[in-house]
Length: 617
Ligand SMILES: [Zn+2]
Image (cartoon, rainbow, N blue to C red; front, side):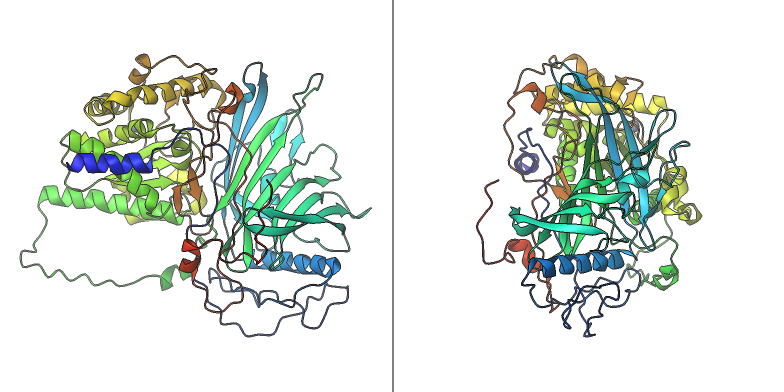
């Protein structure tokens, strides 16, 4: 009975018709509480040369202390002319630059170089992965988690240098969070009003932006969408021009989300180059997704470490309290290591805080446990790694699965497959990571996480876990649906050669070796053949279709977007990168008076302006 209940809830939550395309519906799940104590008068911007009314719109007052919640700027008088609107969003952009000076968000870029497949269209040929932490204090700088010997030159603004071969510059993708960090103003740009347009729930004014002649290289050229309440830029679409010799600037579509009152913070950037029309010769063709999160993370190594030390009450009132037995001590030791690792990964911006998605994952794990009479001394927990590469690992009784992997899994049985492998490690006692119970091993910079933590098993344990996992699945509610899991692995097998970066696990074991799937490969033999032209056969999903990540607080949840019907083999895009189209929505209010984030959760569109006419698109 209990099993059935678990099953039903998991199936309801996960009855994911496997056709979800496009990016998440990015309505924020929660917002940080804001403190709005500032009563200071707005500071006029000295760089502003055009005549400003005295009651100029406020900028955020004084640089906030590191990681204090940003104070929503006071709303100024509504602009009455388009020139005033331009002045306003130029000012708000400076306010955003200033607010982000104390932030060090994580930035991830996943890029697929493309080749033309006659049947499937442009498909991945090979891929690249960058993960870094931005420092926005004086310019746009970054430190990377993954070190690639060749591509770390930082002097080019964007794009890549063409030395001997195409070389991508991760910093170029970081650059795309702003149109122009330092010089976005009337001295350097012409602004032309185009029209009004809705993006999601948010009515926007659209402006074309062109650099003035001789204003220098690498200026923004394109279009910006400005929301019509506070006049923040919410979307930038275009490129940078003119380009320096030996470098290119990519085209980009850069989206921001209103996650805290008064500010729209950069969240997603889609880049694409290439032309597959007849006769076109591609110097390069690629698609890339850049995601930014971890805005609310503590600065690494900051001196606030000491102030954070709390002395918790440790008194044990139980009458039977006594020293732990050797086995109990061993288990406590494992748990200490597990807690250390989970805490450290969360602090490094790599692990989502415990949340709604974990409940779904835990339900799937429970379904397997109960039907196999698995009885562990402590319950198994699950957490979501925030990164795209497909990987799972476990530490103590915590199973970790990456956001990218949850994204591409087509159904619940495939999810059960991914989780069962780690559950098998736990059941078999393949405990890794007890060395992390020593706290000195947690003392490293966030960017050095991958050098300092690792949970790779030896091949013998991998084989044993695969065998145990398949046995458990065959005895679980998923027994009759394992074709789906096998089909997923087959699809992975067809793309494995091209997706080396996506399939490189950074903390756990790879699911593939060379161009072949090794993880639970036994499930592939009984699965049906991959048939791209069979439109109802969905073996794997595109990236980004499943998990919604809040870039401010790193919380994740499942996307509830409407499935889009697949009409050709080219619509399937397994493991592929697609553009972002987040549904923009406002969070709370920006007048700074006692904003309560929870209110906006139940009525996300409550703050839209009176004109509720929805756009045609
Ligand atoms: Zn394993």
